[in-house]
Length: 201
Image: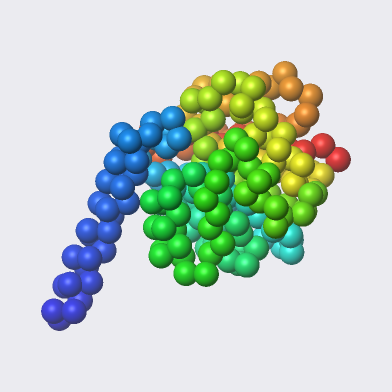
């Protein structure tokens, strides 16, 4: 009885720890954190739906933060061996490594990703899933991020990005991708939608 009560108390505390960790990171570095709270479970699962589970190719996650989307990707059926997480914050990297034992977590800059991802072969990724605050950066940085990711992705692979904005986080005038989007995910706070940019065949 005591153990069950303690377990419930610990679970309740954990629900508050990650948002507070995220908020603290945002206060310290708003441009690199971008949001004041981690993605909700419904949004995270929606993003993970676009990762091809039946592929044997690797997957890259950009800006995983405290790991809500990471958790959804793993629960969707992607093994830890296939997933690489690129995170700028050293605190978040430590948190992810402790939370997901055996996960390949790399500290680095997603807007200059290649020096940190030399272990990933060109044209090998079957998906990139991003929680980066793209809209906080100039458009040239956003397009460079996708362009650099495309160099590591297979033709037709999706770059999955969520956004709270009405407009696409990157210019849809670009000829370097085809695109689609989901409807609004109202159960996320704030409501968000998922944009999918596909590398051409």
